[in-house]
Structures are given as structure tokens and as C-alpha cells.
Length: 387
Image 1 (cartoon, one colour):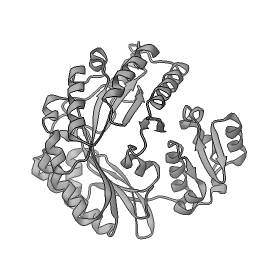
Image 2: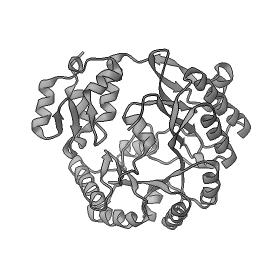
Image 3: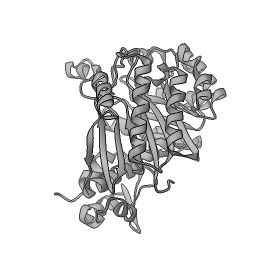
Image 4: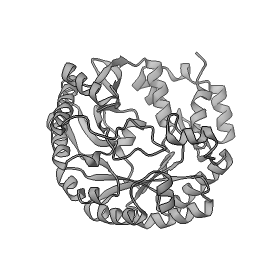
């Protein structure tokens, strides 16, 4: 899917109007610096990575957050221009911006398209007002439908998120909601089970016993039904939580899952970059003030660039590859990481999972089944050899 040297660029905008009770992203409720200072910091970081990694070709730029649609369109344009001006750009480059279906942000969709954004990702989460209230969202179901209608006219490609397995939600109710959502789609959906992350408001409610979640069997039923409904409508799963018609897959997320290099810029952003014959992990300072100070001091906002060992690279390739329908070519994983796959995988345990029907393994290619996807987080530690 990707050529050697192609990269993705992730821009993290950390500010939101409110923080949702399920969210554990690095977000803040107010801006701490002038917009021009922020723009200068992003542009300086981009230039630093361009000097470290010259000659690369960008296949994806992704503005995430936070709520990057709170940015001014001219700021988005300046960042896109900086990325595309200093690196080569694929003729199929995907430039995605996350937004919420609020009236303020809807009014900016056309301006974002004019700025260079060619794909929108809308944080819908539900078509039910009571669920939106429970999830802490600021928009209504009517806002959702208006926003999706505008997005459909403005963008050739867009996607949106839904959250299911909410407390009290039934399979019948979710199926009806999903079927109502399908006509609003343009070939892609991200559907996530409600997951409780440590440190969130929902986690505290669970600890107090105020919030009860669905059990594993119920979650499996929700997942299976979602996959069946989406497949029946021409958008089968191509990743554990993502569904798309052919050609509508998120190129940026495929950069992650297929272990291409990607640059992460902004408070708390992560990256995986290769230069000077080595693969490095990066993590930017989380607090906005610390990040700004780091950019001014060293030209980028990362704590440092940590070399990734061949074994860790191999395991990261497996981790991403087991999430996608296409699976993992172990010979390619060996070539990219420099780590011999037979040294890392317990073939006897692998055979157990093949016999269970959770994985297929043919010609050194490892692919998950739907049953395997239900257990994706436990498969990798099971098949890896003990250190």
C-alpha cells in the first residue's frame, strides 16, 4: 500500500471547549498562548523534522486533538503549506481534520476545504440525544444530521465515530441506530465499544459503583452484529474498529498499522521516525507550556528521540498488523525490523490459535479472523516468546 520512504504527519491541537467523561486524550479547556505563537511553534517543529528526514514523501496529514476545528482555517493552511513545501507529497495525499458537529464548526467546513483539508472526521458518537448527554457531548442529534449533510456536500471523503455498548443500550437499539447512521455515511465509519480509561470521569463512576458496563459476552454480541450490519451494507471491517468501502480506508491510520514512519507534533503527540540508519520513538511534552518552551529551546517538542530495538520494532509491527484485515507478512516484518521472526514467535502457541480459528498462517503470512479480533489484545502476548 505504501512505498519506501513515505510518511504520515500528525498535528495535535490540545484544546477543547469541554472534556468528555470517557476521554483520556491530552486535552485542555483553554488556550494558554497566543495563536501566532502556537503557529510559529508548529511550523518550527515541521522544519526541524524536515531537516532530519529530507527527501520523504508525505501520504497523510492528520489534525487531531483536542478539537483542531477550533483553529482558524488560515492556521491550518499555513501548517499544510509548511508540510507540503518542505517534503514531497503523494498525489493521493490524505489531509484529515477532526471536528465536532456544532454550528460554529459547521460554518468553517468550506473554509477548511479551501485551506487544503480533503477529509473530515466528525466526532458524532451517537444519534440519540440522551446518549449524547451521557457522553458529555455539546451537540444534539439534529446537529449531527445537519453537520453530516454539510460535510457530504463539501468533502468527497469524510468519516464519523459512533460509540456503542453504552450502559442500558440493547442490541436492538444499537442495530436501529446503526441502520439510521448508514445513509448518512460516505463509505466509512469508526465504531468503538465504550471503554473505561484510568483517570477519566467514567472511571471514577465505575469505582464508585455508579456505572455498570456490559460483560464480555455482551460486548462480543455487539461487535459481531456491528460487523455483520456494516458488511451487509458494503463497508466491511478492515481494522478492528473501522469499516469502509473499497478505497475509503483511512490512509493515515494505515500508516500507523503498517508501521510506516510518522512524525508527531504537538503536546503529547507520539511519533515513529527513521533517520541516520535507526528507528526512533518520539513523545512530545504534554503540558502546552512545556511543549512551547521545548520547541523554542530545541526546535521540536519531544523529550528526545529514543532508539527502538529490532525486537521492539518487530513486536510493534505485529501489534499493528494484527489489527488489520490484511494481517502481517512476517518476512516483511523481519526485513523492516532486522529481527528474525522465528526468534520472536512461539510457533507451537501460534499453531494453537490457528487450530482455534483465531488466526490463519500461510506462507509466513499471519492474519486475524473475526474471532481473533475479539481477542486481539491477548493474542500478541500469547504468541511472543518469553524473554
